[in-house]
Image (cartoon, rainbow, N blue to C red; front, side, top):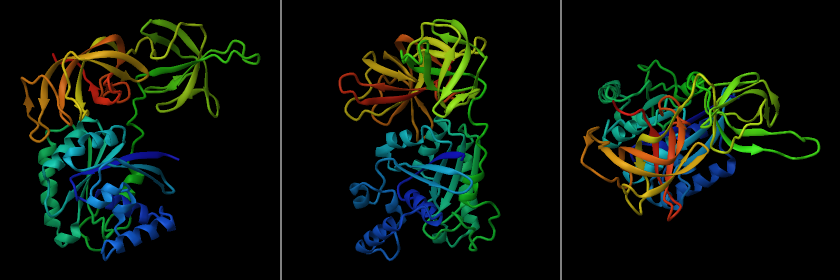
Length: 418
């Protein structure tokens, strides 16, 4: 069954957790004991309705404060698709958590409170979705029941967002008026908004076209592990295991291994379900080659006439996530990119991005937690990579503080400015 990953983002109290609860409830993806539990908690808190946000706000601190802190993942399925939901926090303090949750989704739902319209955190999260290269965006104007299901309110908010979004790199944007609490236009069409002729949210999620989102042109296969069983029944077996990051691997294809530049031919592709004739993006497979080449973890298999960039000098948009220490220029960090691990230092902060105004702030030399900037890096070993907007897998990396072992930052590799 085809799978869709999507994230809900937006400001605090815009109804992200309630919307997910509504989707789970109306699609009958809740166990009876879960429903009984949230009914009891809602009653204990004095609510005169079942608070569906409790299905995702699982931390005690979240329930006490009524906000989402960490990214909550939920799963459900319909006859058409299976879904993985990332419920991202809306508070500015947890921007790094939101980036983590939205970093690998196919679609993002931005919720906007119909009473307040487009606010700073709406713009902030929309900018982050744009930077993360999320292919599809759904703008849900929520709480329409609190504004009398007024079409003029919806049209005004749509106009506000379209004006702001014209400065962003957003490809596919859909607008829906909903009420997550009442269930209007979430799973079933609302009789309260006859003026809206578009699909319900679930119908859109089931039918949004994602087949062209994966890069099936640029073949990229980061090697994670070299398999040599050295058993009597597999005396000469040598396979290279990993996950296809781009393009299509086929038996008989000529390939090149980077950084060595050695070439060979694919003689077989093994998978957990048996031999394959081809492997597509996202599949975990083992590749067999005609020649015994010197290949190790961190190497990249590609096509001889279609290679990623290979360099130790990098340029990237970097989000700093370390709450203990700001980014320090020239400090040595560990960088993890696909299956490659090296050491790196950030040589320059080209500018810091003001994610409220979209302005670029120059003259800074460090980034604090939740700040984003364009930086240059130097690594101790060459990385094989693509521009992030060309391939989100080979274009991303994380930085680890060697002293604490904590993830200090996450970045998106870009082509150098000319």
